[in-house]
Length: 217
Image (cartoon, rainbow, N blue to C red; front, side, top):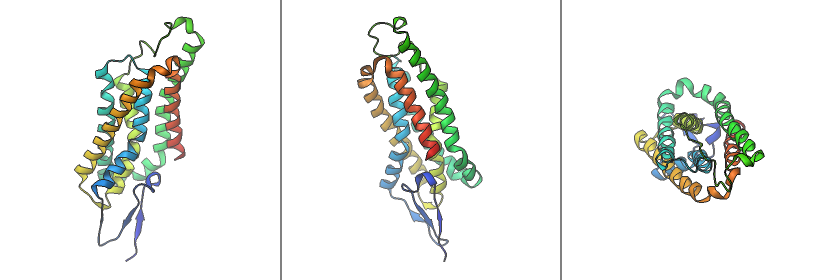
């Protein structure tokens, strides 16, 4: 029988899928972990960026990052699995644009505010190690979580062609992302003070770079 190849363009190197009409290829637990690591890369970078910028934020609020990013990375494959047949082409066509708009707006605002602080250092507390008074809002976390998890929707579409335990795959991807974000949080807390007042500019540039990568990817 003629084989039909179905794949997500952005994940062709991570999760190639070959479908035949008489069987479905299995996905091993190790492969699911690798997929989770690949999907968590953007959330990892955003977590470091947020921790740099909001370095005097309450620990409880910063710890929401692994929760939000992990939850959305686990949810999106489920949506892709069940809704992929209806929305796959639409997501594929506009995912990069949506990601760039969301992260570009957030990142651009961070760069603007950070640049203003650098131009007027007298208005910033001397030897300030981070951006004091800045707060990481739930709205920001929500938008960032959606933007960094859009690719996971495409993976969910691809998983429809595999003999895979969907609950296990989604849970593993969510847990892998959450653990990676915890590592990123620790890195950001330890190294954020080295950037000083440049933290907000650097963080904004990271978000913009992720958005551009999504558009060009």
